[in-house]
Amino acid sequence: MSSKYTEKILVHKIQQDGDTDSFAILYDLYIQKIYRFTYLKLGNREEAEDITSEVFLKTWNYLISNKDQVIKSFSGLIYKIARNTLIDFYRQNSQTEISLEDLGEIKVDTKIIKSLDDKQEVQRIFRTLQKMKREYQEVILFKYVEELSTGEIAEILQKNTTNVRVTLYRAIKILKKLLEQKAGKA
Amino acid sequence: MTKKIKEQLKNLKNEDVLSTRQSWVLENKQLLMSQISKTRSDVSTEKQKQTWGNQWKNFSHIYQMFLPTNINKSFRSVFTALLALVLTSGGWVASAYAEPGDFMWSTKVAINSVVEQGKLALSSEEQKTSLKLNFAAKSAQVLKQVADSDISNKDTKNKLLKENSVDLQNKLNSANESLKNSEAKDAVNLVKEVSLKTKEISHTLKEVADQISITDDASLSNDLSIQALDASKQSLQMVEVVLEKKAEVNSEVSEEEKLIIREHIADTVNQMQQDTQKAQAQAGQLVEDVKNDNINDTNNPVNVLGQNSSSTAIVLVTNTASTTEIVSTTNPDDISKIVPTEDEVNATKDTKTTAGDLLTKVDAVVKTVETENTNVQTLLDTNVLEAVKKTIELKNTVSDVSKEVSNTLIQLPQKVITTIETSTNTTTTIIATSTSSTVSR
Image 1 (cartoon, chains in turn purple, green):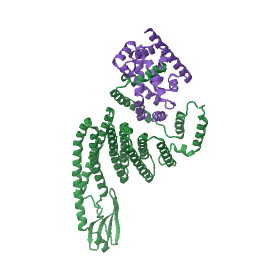
Image 2: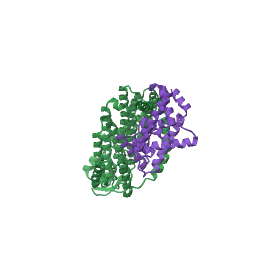
Image 3: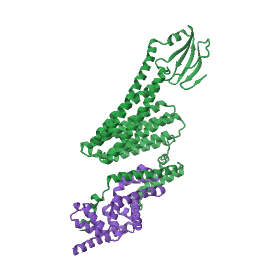
Image 4: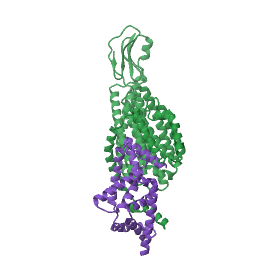
């Protein structure tokens, strides 16, 4: 609660005074999260870094250009900007999200396996996520990887909280079903 | 199974590939800050005037940001009642945007003090140091605000400056004490915050001291300059304390922290070089003035300029640090009192010696700063704590000599030599009044 309170004050200072120190604090708080989100969508470190930089710059420009805009949640704002930036990136580059080849790279280069019970389980989860609708994919990432609240996810996706809960329930159900199907085939 | 999937998803963020590269984070931050600083200057020039309309708009913006999204919950009535109570307390609203010198300024200061005490009371032990540092930083901003204000009454402004500078010192000391008494495990993450905030505070003090020196309140400017020097030293000492606490719990100094400390030390050394150059110039000027006999010892406030006869003497009387009078007197008692004694003549000689020694001392310190700076830079790569300790030692030396020069300048007022044009037969007649910078007839 207190960190959200602090963020609101920082956002207010940025909007009203163009306070770069406040923005630097928010940068430190969110750089890791935004990078992780973009990396999970792109699967490429360099592209994720570029997009992350772009997201922060866009966020700053948005805040100082919209002084009168009431920002209830900074995390909601920045993730929304990140999501939109990724969509623009896909359009410009005619790319889909993580390809299976990249997924293979992740598995070999990054030692994800050491923290999970079974390396194949990770592969399965990622591949299965890729097959799902972007909407389902995103709610799962926001909820379980980024650990955002339902309210924050609702703001990012511009839906109401009930809608988000329902989407999340369906997404987990579909993920579980697809994983069971794969396990059955295996 | 659902639970297992959720746990696996949660654990993903601990993986190396999903972690940022520290070097990229720092580089990107610097690049971003340089990009946004250009847009920031545009925002500053458009800063709204503090009209009541804009102040209400600002307040309304804050109010809406902190208002719960779902106001239909049961807290609504409680919140509304509290808000009504607050709004009817006109002083709170009216003082929110008070400027230094305004009627409501003291109310605003009092309210802020209560709020700060409240926050401290509600905070946990590990948050106290950080909170106190924030309060000190805010106090420095208030001091700057007072210095920048256009209060017409100089005495009021100087009084506010003194009050705020004392408040700032108390808060900084409180943060320092809190840091020293904190647990090592709580202090390990405070390197960046301590370095950046205390550096900012000493910069602000220096700016204010320099700003005040252009007015004629040399004493206040001197006090603020000394406070700025002490704050700069205290800043490094606090960094030293944090590093020692990190060493206690075997916590490594990260690359980011090293970079921040390196910048802090570079900033301190740069300041030391400026201070020593200034002290050198002042000491040099002092030597010149003494050589040209422009300096009068305060123990000998009276100089005989001429003695027409045994019954009449024309004398120069130093009344204060900035005013002198030329007086003619025929009173034999006065004449016997004012002829300089051997001790007074010796005092003048002592002054010349003191000035010369001072200049020699300052020259030596200038050389020491240049030499030791190289040693400190080398130490930074191997032992950050030792580098900080060395910088503190150097800072002490520079501070001592700067203070000595400043104090010497204040204690030795200048006299203005005037020519005597007339004398009269009255016992005492004021012929002319002079100050250190003007002569009126």
